[in-house]
Image (tube, rainbow, N blue to C red):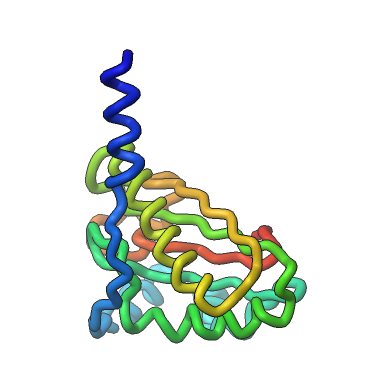
Length: 166
């Protein structure tokens, strides 16, 4: 029993990547046509709305995408977090909810931890610019956007909500 406790402590302390490195990646935009062909035409306009058009009371919502098996914030996602932090600063006492997700590749425990690391990376970035209380939750591989292996990149995400609500 003591051995299991020690292992849990070690995993908790050293499980997440400690780097807050921002990697420079250029997203592949060819997937947009593939997704649009699978979505009903009346919903396509909603998908194409910029995040700034999706309003919540006081603070917006943001979706941050990650590379496979990585918890570092991609360079192309920094602008989304910056826009969110501007809105969050308008209501600095309202809580922020961060939800980490993964694709179903890997074990459930590994994906839970990776989702948590992704949430912590977003929290660390936002904490540099906002003073709002932040709650981090990992859903791992639950609540998939798609089951299609070719589009698993859509599952590798963190959702950030203002007011701690969806």
